[in-house]
Structures are given as C-alpha cells and as structure tokens.
Length: 318
View 1 (cartoon, rainbow, N blue to C red):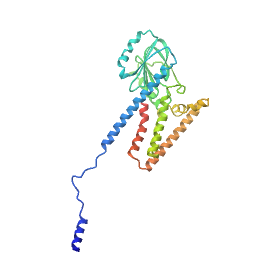
View 2: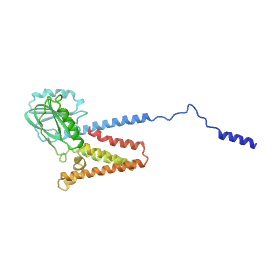
View 3: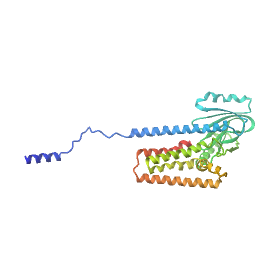
View 4: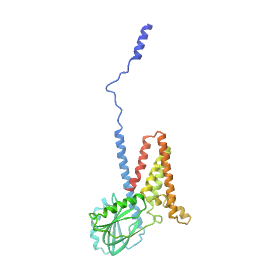
C-alpha cells in the first residue's frame, strides 16, 4: 500500500499543467485609449469655443456700457453661423443716415469681427481692446488669437499687434509677411490705434482672471487628489508665460488690487520682475512634480490630467 501511494503521488506532482489552445487572450486597451483621445479633443474644442464666447461677451459688454466715442451706432449679431442673413444684409447699409455704423459678430476662429460703414474721412472707433482710426468707406476689422487684428478695406490689409507676448510677436511677424505679399495685398492700409489699459477696464480683464485663478484651483485639487506628482501640471503656467501677455496675466490683472489699495501704480520694471519671479516658481514646481513622476508609480488618470493641463494653453490661445 505504501509503494502504491508513493508512485501515485509522484506522478501527480510531476504532471505538467494542461494548456488549452483556446485560452483567452488579454483584452487590448486600444479602444479605451482611442476613446480618451477623442474625448480629449472634443473637450479642448469645447474649451476653445467657450473661450471665444467669453472674449466676445467681454468685448460686447465693454462697448455696450460706454465706448470711448459714442457717435457710432453698434449692432451686435452674435455667432456668425446663426446670423448669416444679418451679415449678408450689412452691405445694404451704405446709404444709412448715420455717419458711422458698426456691426459686430464672431466665428469659430475670431473672437470678434467688426463690419464698419464710415462716411467720414477718418473716424476713431472703439472696437473693445483698441481704439482704431478707420478710413472712409467699408472696412472689416477682425481680431485673431494672440492680440492681433486685421483691418481690411477692399484688397488693402493692415496687420497690427496690440499685445506683449513672445508667441504673439512671432505670429504677428508671420501674418505681416503673408499680407505684404503682392498676391494677397495690393497695398498697405495706414492704420493708427490706441491700446486700452486692461487694469482700468471693467470687463476686458475678466478672461485673464479666469486664465490665472481657475487652473490654479484645478491644479490644487488634482494635487490633493493624486499627490505631489501633479505639481507637474504647473507646466500650464510656463506655457502661458510665452503665449500671453505675461505682465497682465501674472501681475497686473490678478494682483492689481493690491496696488489699488496702496493707492499707487506698479512700475514696468517691478511688474516684469514679479512676473519673471512667478515664472521661475512655476518652472520649479513643474520640475518638482516631474521628479516625483519618475520616483513614484503614476496612474493613467494622473497622466491624462497632466496631458490636459499641457494642451489647455493651446486651446485658450488659438
């Protein structure tokens, strides 16, 4: 009995596990990844469109509640896709009794477009962020991302830059070169303009407040939820430093109330110094988060949130 038991036990232990040819394979993760990227693109497009609505709203409110010059008559049409009939009828206002008539709307690429009928030799017209000297006739002023506006009259075009951003200067140089091409422009249109101060504006500074404080709140929530590795999301502010007017974004708009309480005005040198110091803090925070990123195991959700904060400045800029 003992020998029999020993033989059976040996056979049982040495038996190889049976492998089935029909063993199930691990499910691929391509579908969730593709779904996430499609969802991310849809979210960024939605952010872009909401940002256009925000910019158009603050420009409309700025003009509706007290333009610099009250003589022009403004008509605000809204989103161009919903106002095609009204936009097509603008050309019939040439014989209007008013000296200057302005129609404003926006589309998916421009936060504001103004169609202007001007009967004066030269009229100074408030277009929200800037006050522009517009020649007689029909003109079209379209605001592009990066604080750039184009004034077109017939086949003549003028490209002007009214911001102070590194990326904006490069974008302005590209557009200027494009419209200096004789194939695209029969001549330069002389344009003079004055930039409004965002600090003293009731409405124009609202986007900058949202750009600065809302992502800061979201980054704080993600750090509490996912840990120190999410300090890497401060890359958002590093990108914004180059894409937008860093003095207005980092100092004059979010912290301008401090100087108002002190009844003083911040100097240009001090504003640049504080903005540069904040940029260094944001870079150090991002490096600190990336260091923890390498040190700790990060979840897929952490990577997705970081990708969102990295792409968000591009959705706000373009």
